Image (cartoon, rainbow, N blue to C red; front, side):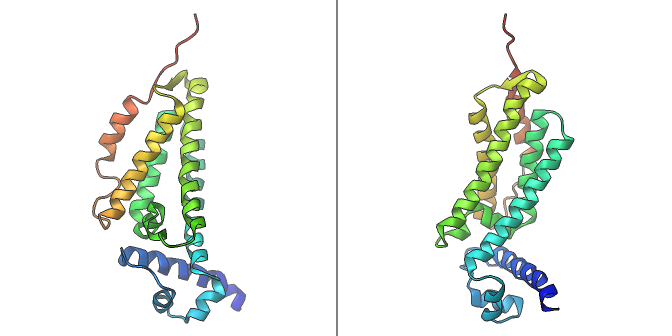
Length: 202
């Protein structure tokens, strides 16, 4: 019976940590405070997670799994490159907006003072997204006869930086400046200049 409860308790701990990151913005989360939030002892926390770093890793795992599962569906369902990129960025911004505590993890501020491995994991998440955008833009020439107006790597970096910047503003404003605010107008501007017809050889 205890084994059946273990996954549920782990999930409960991670949910409590995400909630504390949202409600106690700017404060350092201690295992003692987290244990009180969950209603267990610190020793019980450590039975499920050997360290606080592993708890943060659990949150990062959830972020990665959720976002990239949806990215896979977008690639299956959306045919054209511009709409693919826009849908992926809207997904990222919407996910951060709906999950303020996780947005702090994505923004990296809450990981200051924690192990460098955690910051590397978040960095890899955004690098993976940027690589996905770059691949979509590169494939546009083969699939649609269109290519980025600037090199694909530069265009993908611009799009990823736009999303990262909106998430950072959201966290820095204590969740007042929503990541999706003005996004439709901003994406309209970005997408209008993202691709152009590929020049065919004479």
